[in-house]
Length: 168
Ligand SMILES: [Zn+2]
Image 1 (cartoon, protein in one colour):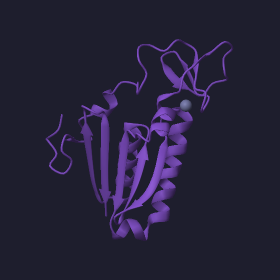
Image 2 (cartoon, protein in one colour):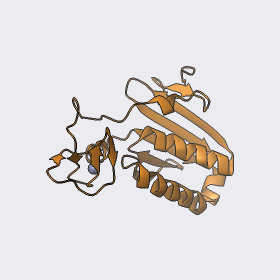
Image 3 (tube, rainbow, N blue to C red):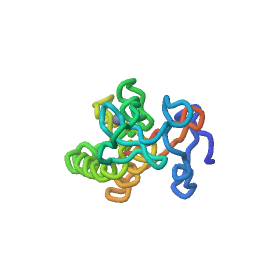
């Protein structure tokens, strides 16, 4: 666990080496107990099978339950917050937003719970919310790798939220 964050109370700053986000278990947002298998999400048709949500043909006689990503979208309750700011960002905004969409498409194709919820302008910054912690941190790391700048990742273990701030 990293140091206590001063900018985001309740959050711990983590380093990319700490690997904490890799160890997080599957999102069980608003799912109590163990889901029966197979279960299909009635909103996005993702299938819960072999302990994880996947894009599969809808099985016969599947149970129905809203998947955590759709439930978070319905509740407007993101798991990840990615804030992008700075003169460089706004000068290269289209390029950076394209990178973000490409990564989301790739991640979502393999992991149905990894989605961008919204992208909005906010106080000279752009805020992107995601249904998945690792998507937010992964996007931050990809932007940092491609464009350098300053990247901070803060994890709140109590609420299982991640806040990622990138600026250049
Ligand atoms: Zn769903």
